[in-house]
Length: 208
Image 1 (cartoon, rainbow, N blue to C red):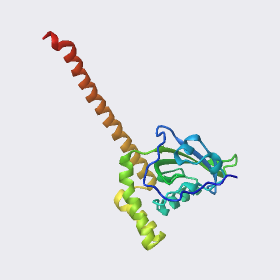
Image 2 (cartoon, rainbow, N blue to C red):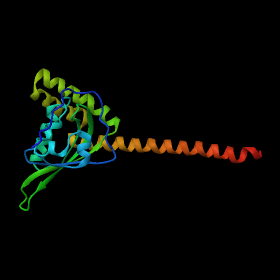
Image 3 (cartoon, rainbow, N blue to C red):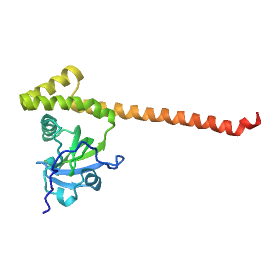
Image 4 (cartoon, rainbow, N blue to C red):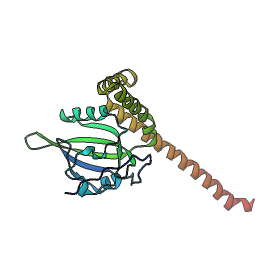
């Protein structure tokens, strides 16, 4: 089996991929990759033969705090759907940010057999809001340990956010997407008004 070659270094550069598409992967209950779509391969720069049969953390970025993944797996093992904003690392050491919607795969008897993750690109505004939290959690983890990072994470959600991480992520993403759509709509209206004025000048000014 072709083994993935880990990046020799981390590069502070975002990888180029089609952000209009959805990244899809399936894993077993242990997080072993069973399936990836072509968009997944495009974003992470690995081919399918390198990914199939490997642990999903092959694309984990060192900037991600461990508590983010611990909370994720705890929810999935309980059979709960889960959303997360994650920074991944590509084969060449670059990065890409996504919001992931995890669903639970079950057999005919209701037993959990694996998980399906569908990922979308996130607006820059989401990254700007979540990145400071992740940096703080990572610093605490390195200086005080994973438990201290976990305690701060839960305290932050309770005291400053007032909702679960899952709700926080969905709320943050939806607000930012709505804001971007409104800005694009306003830009489009301004451009149309400018074009209209130019057309009016072209067609009518010479007759004045």
